[in-house]
Amino acid sequence: MLDDMMDYLENIRSRPVWRPIPDAVRRCFCESLPQEECALADIHREFMDNILPYAVGNAHPGFMGWVHGGGTPVGMLAEMLAAGLNANLGGRNQIPVEVERQLTAWMRELFDFPEQAGGLFVTGTSMANFLAVLVARTRALGVDVRRLGLAGMSPRLTAYTSVDAHRCITQAMEMAGLGRDALRLIDVDANHRLRPDLLQAAIARDRSAGFTPFLLAATAGTVDVGAIDDIPVLADIAAENSLWLHIDGAYGALGRLSPYLSPLLSGIERADSIAFDFHKWGQVPYDAGFVLVRDAQLLQQTFASPVAYLQKAARGLAGGEPWPCDLGPDLSRGFRALKTWFTFKAYGVRRMGNMIAGTCSLAAYLKARVEASPELELLAPVALNIVCFRYRCADADRVNAEIVVAIQESGIAAPSTTTIKGCLAIRAALVNHRTRPSDIDALIEASLRFGRELSRAVPKA
Ligand SMILES: *Cc1c(COP(=O)(O)O)cnc(C)c1O
Image (cartoon, rainbow, N blue to C red):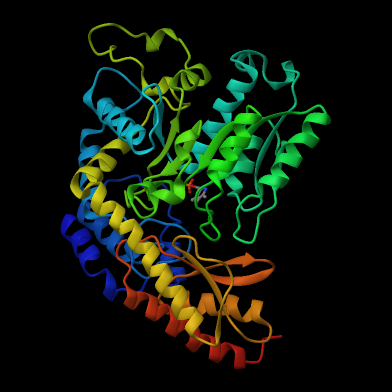
């Protein structure tokens, strides 16, 4: 099995990025519950034939749709070790918890957070954003909100984010019981950054209408175009208005690892909380999200529950306070920290930072190729590693959507689509450390070839 996966990664360039899934393969996963034993070799064969070829393909250098990390062999091996150990990181007196604390300390160092900051591995940034909203809610309403619920509290809280923020911020407001109507979506400027003037106006309007503004969620690396909100200005506004400043840095926050990109993220050290993923730009295998909170006490106040079967002790296995289960909603937790620890140790900050900056250089190359081609048009500024463009033609939205599907089905590359100012865009998010200029050339050539073919074709009725 190890040989197969090493071969898979070594020879990934010779495979299609993605391929359509035959019905016969799909039907293999509609069996009833297995009653009898089956030889491991047979199951492995099924994996090789029916699962491995039909994954999304984000390990492939041609994968550019959505912001997905590519993974590494180091992360894969660490994941194997973690599974063998089968550690449960809810708490107790064990070194695996210290590994997670080590990562928390490294993230404090990376983001210039104070000693009292705390953090926690979670599935991904969707969950990390949700936890941050809950912690901000505790700060605004006090720990009593846990007992009384929102029904027992009088302030009507409002939160602020940009129209380009990830939809999981809205979802976090819904799940926190605050409701999505309490989230003000502030318009953005030409560079897709939240407009501070409109933010201030919205806060003032809400205050005079009797609301209590409590949270500002800025984005460092929007999912559509890679824009970074003006964090220093937003941090000032948050401070003036006593708002919790949360940064959704799902993929962008790790730009901090690169001396070239770090200045773009200045001000992030002033945040009250940061949510980000090691599984995107950090290339740690899925899943590995993280939430970092300036005041770890607030994490505990939001989530810790004293119960008898989780009794702690000064010595023995029940030692080792504070336990991760008191910093978040999960009790049983996997050893996500190990693959992340291996990744940082094996590659080091310098190489990881260069790799991240390298994806931005590729984006600059793609942008230049789009601009040099009269048949193509750039649709958004390129701030980081995401390029949105389209093929110029009549009925452009329909044709470009078809171009993207044709490229995906060809197996050459896997871009995705998004909508920029009402126009459907071909979106290439360059996240994978394996992607090279030749992969960008392949995307451009495929876009031109399918663009010419499909813009000439008569649309199907
Ligand atoms: C990917 C992403 C998310 C969601 O993160 P998951 O790890 O997929 O849950 C949130 N915000 C932004 C800006 C993202 O790019």
